[in-house]
Length: 345
Image (cartoon, rainbow, N blue to C red; front, side, top):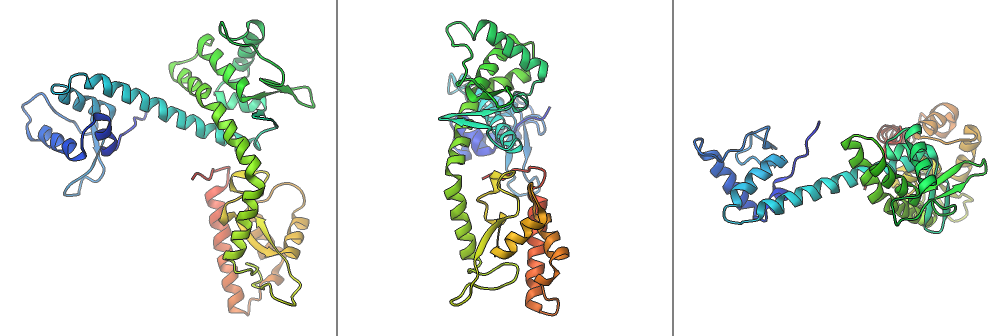
């Protein structure tokens, strides 16, 4: 199992010490081999750059606790403070990991199936993936919740609040429904300690994750319009394929084409690198050629290099420069974000 490392500054902050005090103590530990105070590389810490004259260190929790025991001689109670800080840090890191997974699931499933006010609803399959369970596990949880409600003093499952019925009559679940399942599985499922920690974190962060997604969806149209306007300004109101510019007396309109389409990749909808400024006629022709469904950068690359060879004059050096720039842009974008690789800020 991988172990987390704390930076030297994070370690100093947890211990309530200045960074120079931390390294003076570390140097003291290293200076004497015959005392009880020792930090072992690989067990208590790792060097960031061992060849440097003053190598920085990153510390495992074991190393932080060893330092805490040393400092506790003059600061009684420090061990308890540090233990609580490390516990809080582990919880926070787990929450970050779970939040990232929920975001990824929402992207991969095409976002929310329905929104009712502050509630967003997702499929049973998405719930299974978020909770890291299986069909049997989620069915057992739902059965328990339906039969006996939640823990004593808490509400049971309610239509329009914890779940909705889809057009096919299938239940789709809100963040409150997911949180209820997480609470139930924490207390009533026979799961491993690590999976229980995951489910607890889901219950703690799922409502905020869904609210963030609802806000993002609501703000998406304006945000996308702004991103397209910025892309057009950056392109100097010129088509990035043909090089033609808007000008007085020229009947030409420009569109912002999403190389990864907005429906399947909403996380890239307002991403500058995902927007290609092209003539409206080319935009319409591309989608006519592509047909229904989503599109990716490789689709436009094929369209421009195989289907519409007329867009680039091979005898024109400027045209070939544009073609080469376009090829690099589309190839790099495809490589960086294909297979639902998320854009993180």
